[in-house]
Length: 459
Ligand code: TYD
Ligand code: MG
Image 1: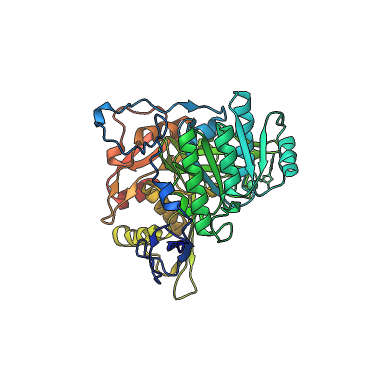
Image 2: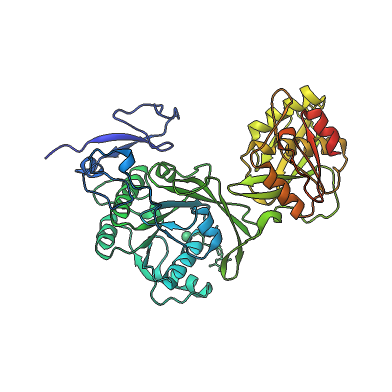
């Protein structure tokens, strides 16, 4: 018989090499390459010329003129869980494959069971494949969610070949795999959850989903930092990557789209965990403001734009005298490297020094802010803490701060301002280029060019 082919797969980026190396040649991570026995015929399977149905990745190998390609949007299924439909980019796509990641206990299984119950009401056939929980545990969850269990199909299975057989035969329209780490293929000798198993199982199920038009959702246990090897490599295979984020201590749960071939990236779905599962929060723009009504030093309100909708998030700073030769810089929900850069700009262009101070920054409610339009809010909060003086009442800010101390515009400034006005904010300090042409009722806009001007305006 033929000797099985060996390759080495990076557990960080999923890149492959033929020979073992200390460093991954693709992403340059060290000691991440793991041995991977390529299954008999696996290479052939990936590229087999089976035609995909209309609208999906076509692997016939035939040439066609781009002008002849149909531009019809793939049909969507709206689950009616509007926050879920929103992060999916406007409902489920036939043949679309998604990965939902997040910490254990954050609500992945819960939301997917809720989605299934909705689909059943719409007459969409669905199958829940569980390799993690027993059937009775899932039945108990359904009871708790007050879902009618009749007609919800369940399969307790972890062997890939069995699942493949059932999907090919029954062709359910929606399938949940909970979780991808529990599956294994009998054709590989590595353990479930290993990089090679996760990759092989996901790739093969994805192919079946595409060829039968099945909407497939993988559950993956992983934090955004990719603490668990495996699911990161799925990001390349799937169409949509969703991560749960948010504070497990609060009742709010956020689902963010990190990648979406079918919708806006960074789209955020906001839910509240209740006794009967996750409920969409349809008007979430104010939930990330802290309870304090009176203004306190070190706090500012940022209007951020997550996906297609503005959100108001309180940014808190604490600046305190440091007793260490290397003062601490700690950022929760904000990029820590960016914080160091902003502190340098603050010193150089506004004359405010923090070299002997510890600086802590927190975005309230566990929300993670990735956009640079948060810069000005971070510096305003720090400035307020240093001066021990509350910022103006009813103030919101946004804007990027450049290395030259200039305040740069943020995308969708008008929308941000209108949302702030709607929530009763009365003053906005924003980049000059975002100044509205027509006044917004109830909102006094201060447009600034330089950091020093901005800091004068916020107090
Ligand atoms: P679960 O969905 O099982 O999380 P995951 O699949 O991501 O590991 O559980 C979510 C948590 O929410 C669990 O700790 C119990 C709790 N919960 C509720 O508060 N209300 C509910 O209706 C349900 C079903 C769970
Ligand atoms: Mg679960």
